Image (tube, rainbow, N blue to C red; front, side):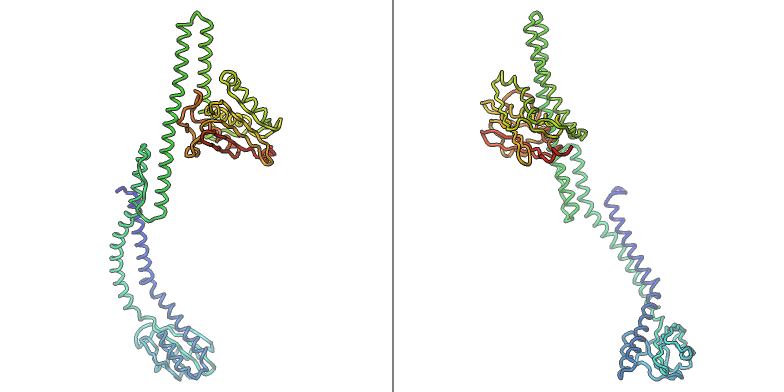
Length: 467
């Protein structure tokens, strides 16, 4: 086991804790026992003195004194102004001052002092030990002396010391054993998770994190690591899909560019018309590569948070018309129909024009790729009371319900073939999502089998007031 391992650390801390507890036991049960005993007995004789003062005129004062003396293990003596004993409690333990010792000077000293209370500490010559005495003036002719021994615990201290030696040895052995098993019990699942995490770092996503212990923090850690594993596995799968998609999308135009470049050089060197056709195809394929690279760069830029919103006022209707104008070639060559529905001639909004242009462009491009045989793409802009609704619809086969939660994920691509052979990196909808999230716009998609899909987003009118 490593010196700084969790197992050793827990074991060490448990042993240190046990030693501290034993240290406190030794300190308070042996070193400070006399001080505690003195404080306790001082309180006892003071309590008895208070009882005598409270019930001094009671008819049963003798019984009250006896009970109080017995309960607190003290001796009580009532004397007159000449220091003669009037009453002595029935309890007379070791260390108590005998009632026959009337000539002791402390009594006469207190009587002459005219004080209400005073505490004395003296050596009892009968037992050669220390005695604590509290004197109380009950009235001008009656005085009470409550005394108790301060040295009945010498033997007790010796017993405690002997017991503590055995207790210390037993506790240390038990602490050593218990600490070992507790540290092993707690560190084992963490060590196992650490080993599994190393496997995860090496790309083994089949590892499982679990804790067999009923410890909340360990169970939460296992759940978190399992969640991280699933997300990393998903990311790795999407990365592989991206590589496959991008490789495929790069390979086709590059192959075309090379083939038509060679044809232009070798076969059509003397045919200007053929060369022009070759160049047009090469330019078209380069445009496809540009779209692919731009999509990747745009998504990377958005997710690294280096893109900020550059808001400005612009006409949403005019922007949409400009975007649709780019697809005029599809209307002329492939009979595509772009149905743009809007009641307002202009709708001025305050947003990032470039990002919203890309949002609409990507959604229209997505609709073109997946629309039905009628080649219809429908764009609706509805000026509602609280927001502006933008819808882009196609008439294709729709999206399966189980696929709807994933279509916004980066690198996701629908497995069914596009209607047109356009570039499809799987990044378009992810770029849309990032731009709309950046604007805090509500967005979504609805789809119906064999009737098409409708992508939408809403621009709150409150946002247009912020300039």
